[in-house]
Length: 74
Image (tube, rainbow, N blue to C red):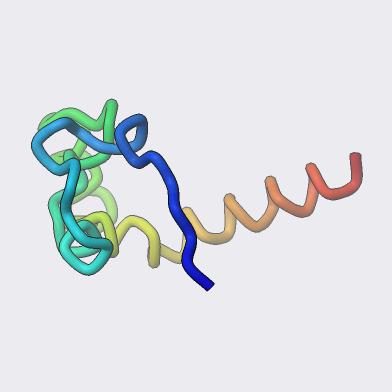
């Protein structure tokens, strides 16, 4: 099943038009609103260098799961 989505709001302009495989390998600052300084802090604190690293990080995944569970009760 094909899924379409306007990713422009999620991505920095320089990364729009990339494939999902390319985006997962892109630096964290490819995400809209994440600065190079933010990316450096993520690298230092959690060794997160790419969008994929961020998405697979156990702390971020745990937080997302807790939020999803909490919101599903509403």
